[in-house]
Length: 193
Length: 175
Image 1 (cartoon, each protein chain N blue to C red):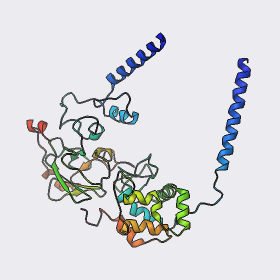
Image 2: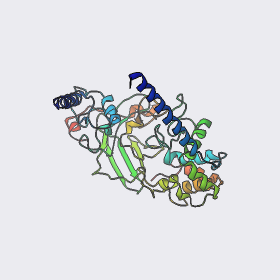
Image 3: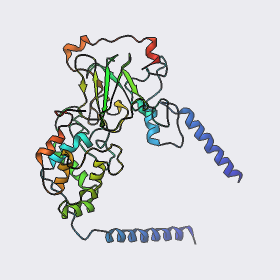
Image 4: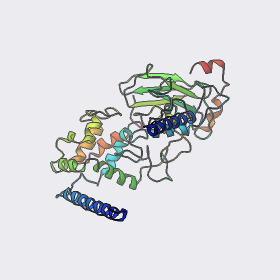
């Protein structure tokens, strides 16, 4: 009996130790899904110069952490928009338009690091959902709809490859690059999307 | 019982269990040949399924039992990418086997009955959203995608309907 108590205690200490060293976002569940845990760990640590909030972790798959039962807030859709398909120049104030199968549309804009996010209370979409991003004259439309993924970066990551279409961008026309301004972050960017 | 004889006994028991398993597997082998809808012309069906089923966040993923490859989703050749190019012959081939291997016995029954009552197949029920489907209802009876697949089950490729379904998001108005 004493031996079993000792084993149980050691197991509990091991679980607590594991939860304290987990990488990525908080909320590590020692009884959770190992695949999800690995996804969180792969995100790496926070940038010490960027507080957690709307400006953190640009380009990462947001819903790895911001999903139901995990980190708050939960995101229905979230991503980072860049200027062009090659350079990862963040585009602020780009309009992101989401239209679902029921014809409902939701619009939001990117912040100074190109991040945007949509919470379920704002837009309860009926899949599939069609998306476009626009910063200059014309919108850049996704050719394929979103069926179930909340994180743009799950499918749109670098480098372009057999399971990725590359990062999101607003234009591939080099002559327009200069007309797409970037701007410095303000205090308001850290408070709102 | 010495450790050696105990080990030998375990080996004999393992061998007996293994042989019995072989017997069970052999006993479940179908005594009829599976039939399936035609491979010829399936390219049109695969193209139709690409934008509605084969996106990277859905069945364009490794690990899905219905795994679809294509130019607008997951690529089979690691040298290709999801951003450009055209769907290649090995991808069509892989898609065909992925679709027909979903429920092979039931598909054979539907095929042998001339494609009647296609909703017996989970492929149709999921696509129509009549069985819980995380991606929602992607086709309705008699729309382009539905007709493309249902007619293929009847050994009839409706090239125009399949083509129309394949162009969603490219040259048809999106919502």
